Figure: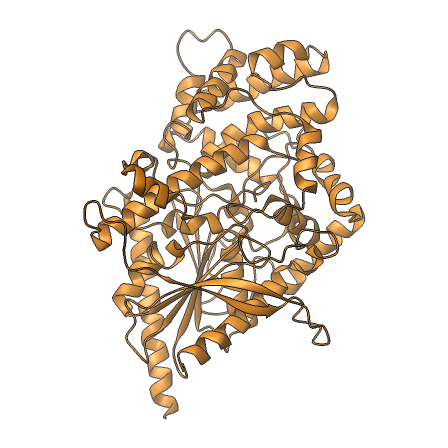
Length: 534
């Protein structure tokens, strides 16, 4: 999200998967299945470093998705063709709730029929989110492995206003008002009808899947349309909207001190002390040293740039926690090893080395700390059909979710300059949304969906204890069929990537629990159909 950036699961070692030049070019045209979910990540305002983390994970996921596909389908050496998923576009109402309007847009979808047992096999729906959707949404991932086992039809739907599913004027202030989770759920209902008519489906069992924001959509689709979807898997789903998401950095701090993943109390203390030194330099307006020590692209020109600066620096640690183990070197263990290196002159020097190591890993020559540049980026109405939609997502934080990760609580190890007010200020500045309406919108979202007590059925909520977003999800069983799986030692959406032999035992166990639950749902659905008769 980019401000809530949601970066999908992946494995760092696979980022260096070697492809021929031709295959690399092909792979780079495909987006990983999880980028759709990967958008929730922290930072304030522009959060420029978060964008770099997101982009690196994006590239890594492309290579990982290609490797998964290559392994499963056995693409011959030198061959550049393979069995493709079906890409299509569905014409949808721009406003489902005003049938007097004739305005429409074209929404992209993907279909994989390879495993499907016609005509009665189940349908597995993968839900897109705040980024573009690729064919790998129906070719790779945990849900694809289960689809193969249960002979399911795989379909996925790109979220309105993201990727290619947007009109040319979609990012203007007038047009963007039709972007909401409620409209997105109506899109899913319409897509359900489209697929049912296309394949003449009558009594097929639908199960939906999603992670991060799409994880919430997965749960909400089951909640609001129980007659259409039989069950849902909601991974790392922040179903509770929250204006001031101060708990995000509480989890980050706890993870930095967690020895299970390479953290320590010493590491957390040094990070805190390092940021205290940064704050003291900013307070004394000794910014020239900071600009030099942390390779700022431009001079820091005032309080807004100061907030941008500390946010970008904190983003390195936030990203390491949220996507722990998914980018080689940029994980908790790696950062804490740098911070606690013997002979380090000071905690401030540790921050400098962390920043330098991060820049080297992302091939950056300098860090963009201009607040004005971030505002310009958010104001841009240029359509980008690839990657995460930052303007769109920030709009949704202003109109539905909040999710602003702040550091004004004493438990936060970073800078108190990461404030709620600095992030809220972008809502009126960029979208002309009054400040007082943001809190009301967050409250309405929770009333409309039930927050983290949705009172539904047949939903699995899956979370990792390292992932800061688990603080807004469902962590305890709500009923016998609305269950929570909490995975020790894993980060954001870890269960959604393809299974691997080196998955930690806790993740393997969680995958088994999910698979058993999905199998039980399908058995239950068959019994229900048999008892109902022809």
